[in-house]
Amino acid sequence: MLGKVLKKDFNSTWRFFLPLLGGYVIAAVVGKVLFEILLSVMDSSGHTSMVSEGIAVFSFFYLVICVIYLVSCYLMTSVFVVYDFYKSMVSDHGYLTHTLPVKTRTLIWSKVLIAVLWQVVVNGIVSLSVLLIFTGHFSWLHMDEYFRLISTYWDGTSTARVIYTIINMIVESFHRPLLFFACIALGQQWKEHRIIGAILAYMGISVASQILNAFAIAITGSKEYFVSFPFSGYMIFSMILGIVTSAAFFLITDYMLSKNLNLE
Image 1 (cartoon, one colour):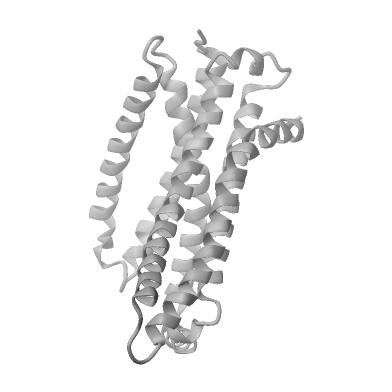
Image 2 (tube, rainbow, N blue to C red; image 1 turned 120 degrees about the vertical axis):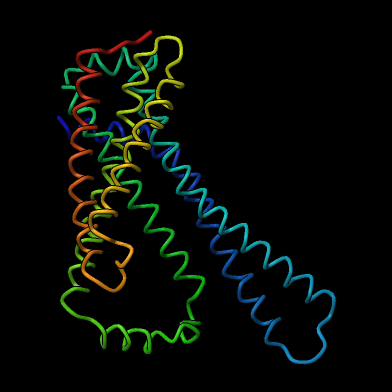
């Protein structure tokens, strides 16, 4: 049953993401062309014409716009995920969703997995676009010297940090959508002010998270995290906290939507 729900949720979300990602791909390709033009103008010797200078200025500002678009992709990914959950789970459309012969937790799992999927897709496309822009210019970055430097100072602690970082990234990919879903589930308890209730819930949870993070920093001494083991200690704490809070968010969402659902 989860597979069928996933297919349904994918069909309801791709129409949001396809224009966003398609536009970004086009912008990245044009950005690559203008980037090469900008480099050729900068490398040209002698006097440059006003046309060349104008092209260089235009190319520079276009690349700035591409960076803004890149940030917008991440922002809009969260917006689309939240909107889809709100529309299908707690708005008028929720009447139809909750009449399906599917457990609430299955619906939530489907939303979470779809959110993670789109995060992976966005990260992949953004990474490929950056790679495209710098293709042919990696010598600028002195990658061979960079990797040689890494291999020189790489040790067991570095491996542990990388492992913890990867695990935290995976946990965070589930944690963020579950946080949004829990806030929406809590917010729908405010009959006439659902959105305000969700925002207040998000603010309260964020404040609590900051307090816990400050406590973790005080305990692990992670201000030294670039040179000593406390970084790993802080990462372990963050990983455990992320897993526990993600589970709590899931249980809150499941309880609110299955036991205290309050649709208009």
